[in-house]
Length: 208
Image 1: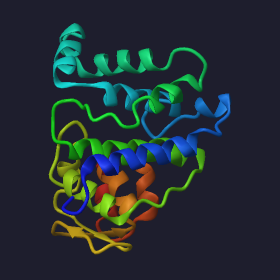
Image 2 (image 1 turned 135 degrees about the vertical axis):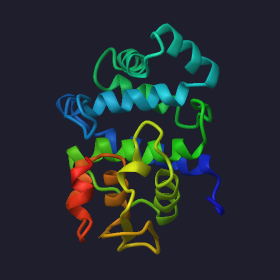
Image 3 (image 1 turned 120 degrees about the horizontal axis):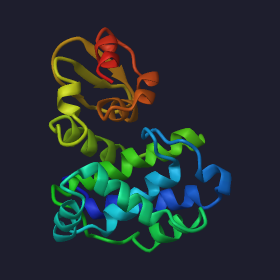
Image 4 (image 1 turned 180 degrees about the vertical axis):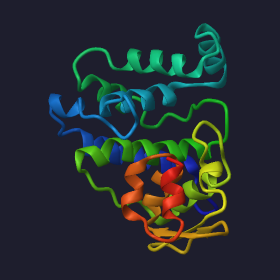
């Protein structure tokens, strides 16, 4: 993140996602995403809610949900996915330049726009060539974090090595492949395993 403001990265990825989603049909909005039990529309609704979030709003919402994070998240998604399928994209466009976010490091928001972008794009067959700096920033964040996704624990005892960037982390049996495949697998998306190989792959697969 040394050379680029994180919000510039986030806003650029939001705009790229809008461009990819504008042509979707009503039926495509109902496509199952890489997030279990969520459609691509649900994932975008979650991204809208997160873009609107502030630390005080987060605490208040968590309290109203009995301090159950999943319950709060489900309420937020339901609120942002009412009306016609394309309405959620309208809500997302309204937050393209937002700089509010839940409690936690801003890098988590950079990670969200990449990982959830793939949660949406992959099932729809939409490719995205992400800037290398962006992927390295997100990978360096997730490799040391167990928050919500358990990434640090999932890759413990393994060496991850990128084939399309000067990036590696960890020690132990090696897993090699593209940066985006590493990101998906370390955040618990089995779809990321398809692009990976190496002696450590079986261990990583077992941790999904």
